[in-house]
Length: 344
Image (tube, rainbow, N blue to C red; front, side, top):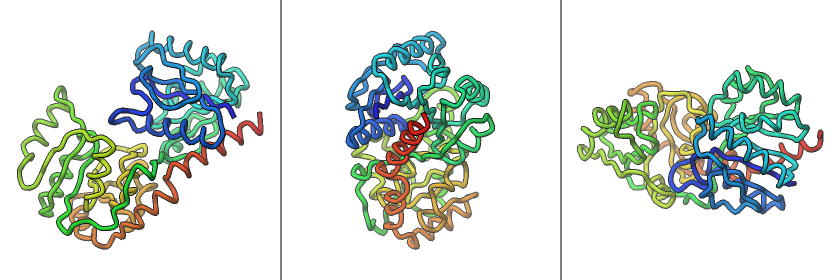
């Protein structure tokens, strides 16, 4: 098959630090070609993913109208040159506009809550040539309200990137790894660590201005370097592997409906249980008492930390191997492509 994949224009594929979906796109490009397919990529100009043919976006801002028009033209040109059997978009449905009326099979993959308006008109204009995937059942439930054929295909991790650690030290720290903003719950992770007497390592990027900047200054900074609370900044893949592998648990008590959250799969790949909240896609990833604990309040979190010795770290790794590994998820996308071409 000839498969043309698109990613959002803001970040290169693969990303240099954060950028979960860009990692997924890179895995797709690499593994689909290993399986014998020819893959083209439309992405940020600095992308280095080894696609058979690369087409850079002309605009780097998804929300800018002029850039959107430029990127729509860029995708149209890429399709004419590459002649794909299927177009798989992880970018914006607007970029597909000139292609919607053609019978060329198209897939729109959502990593966030889809817009009812754009999704519904996409369904109408495509007349059956456009399919949808969501990175979780949660996202698909939202998308189905606008119509169209939806299939949940979860995000994944490359197992070789994460080293399974079957045991950790008795005084192993808790780790918070995510963007440091209120919806990710860094302040709650601090409270959990303080109430359980555990060390907490906080990793991730933060903003110094606006509401997010005030959150950082007022609710995070005052606790740093006190009572075992440490901030280590953003981490790359090597640092992330080491940080998660040494942790007793990754604690990210979210306060929003998480579409998926690749970091949760990354932690489990290291054998590290997760403590989070039963919102969004988390109940699809974490099996209560098997891979970690989904908590609703601080008291439940304290109990979860106390019960961490009951979690077998092998079960965490096995969860990823069986359900969220790159091999499993790329296979699901490959099957989807084949099914669409069979009905072309």
